[in-house]
Image (cartoon, rainbow, N blue to C red):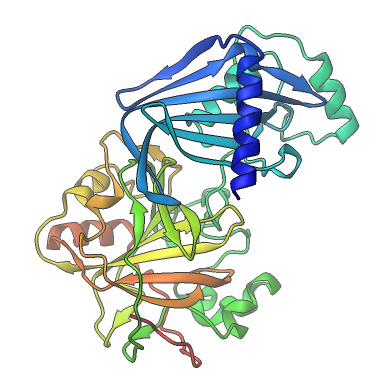
Length: 417
């Protein structure tokens, strides 16, 4: 590891001394400033690369070195303008000019991802690729044809973003339901990667999910399904959760099965030495999980994903009591009909919806909607939050049916606390 860091530092020193950096400001917010070194922009084959600098007004915490803070990050980003994707090959973090963390991989093995709109990566990509015409998703072309497009594209007067919607974890945006008011729970929504209709009741309800599509077979055949009742547990020395929960929610939607909230990038969870990004929050009423047989009026599920698509979900129970300020800000923009995501006007952060006491139960399970994919790490908070009677009623007026999957068999699984 020391050899890798030394090699990276040497490489960084070489490329830094090879030219006088010309930093261009791309974005300046209250909390941070995004800059790009124009002199570092280089095109090789179909990729462009550039050094990026992010200056933070307040110290940040890296989940992998949570005991250290930094206020400056330098990154080497690689841009595939044809597919509108970006990869990171090198990262350097500094605290007042002192290097506190570094990491790097070969560019050819770096993972290219589609940026979240208006994120740092998205802003930098638009700047770098503004003279390149992005590929049109509706008309796929061969790799050879895309190379021709990338090399012959002309500068445009306006910048274009990829028309491909950003996919949330384990879920894709699908067509909104028709006549949502009549059958809101049968809507084809982004709760599933599939267009097969499913519901929480009737012939397409939970008892039939495994028969609706071959891709839903795990719903019936799986041995590690969620939710479950948490009662018999094994005591172990669970480590305190290391997380960052300060970045705000981006938008909210009534997808016909649940109220879902998408988050801006930045919220992190470190579990088993892996970093998970918080992607989405879904609400279920009544709760899907039960604790010692107790059903709660509301459960919030915070979906996290690592770079390989592995999922960890934090579940928070809500009891009836004092109104929750975070819920109040979210509820103010919920549509009573199935809708596309609506950008939130008010700032809502995860720490407004997750308890300060983060003692938890841990178990292995699945997502609770079709296709019921297993291998999910569940962290169920022991301490509930509160929501007022009016707030619970408001959600039930939007999702007018019980959207909790029935309890599943434990099948020998161990619940750790």
